[in-house]
Image (cartoon, rainbow, N blue to C red):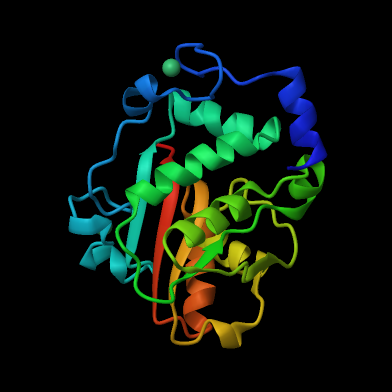
Length: 224
Ligand SMILES: [Zn+2]
Ligand SMILES: [Zn+2]
């Protein structure tokens, strides 16, 4: 555990974000109600879709085959992400990872679990790359291969850009390390929050160009 996490634990011991019970950020009693499950749907158009597959109409514009979402980005989900990002809470990352492990079906053999990279200046400030930590836990629990294959090439502001412009900006901002490892593999992308979808689509598009056989994604919470 990193120093900054230890310091934070000393300053603020965990208590349930919903009911205040001490000892954990989300107690077993609150878990189910605090993080309501999402129904299986296409993440782009919200049409009902078995196994959260991207529907055939949206598939023409997306490299992602299935995108699993654990919950909506409201209340406790928001607080968990906030505590993870800004209070450096490894415990929050571990809770989110556990929820994603349970939300996922069995993965194809030798799936590569790839985190969407956190903007590096934030990692430096926070001292914790939470998405990498979540992806590593998912890989371990699902007997898959953790591979931090994406990295930032430069920071690009997305403010005010159209969907198409954001996608191309994000593709410029990301880079695939060792594309030879991606070829013909099944990939699972991991991220904490889905907002416009531009980042995850750019990541998927780059991995497809690198030769990935199929690309799924799992995200903790979708903002609506
Ligand atoms: Zn509670
Ligand atoms: Zn759709």
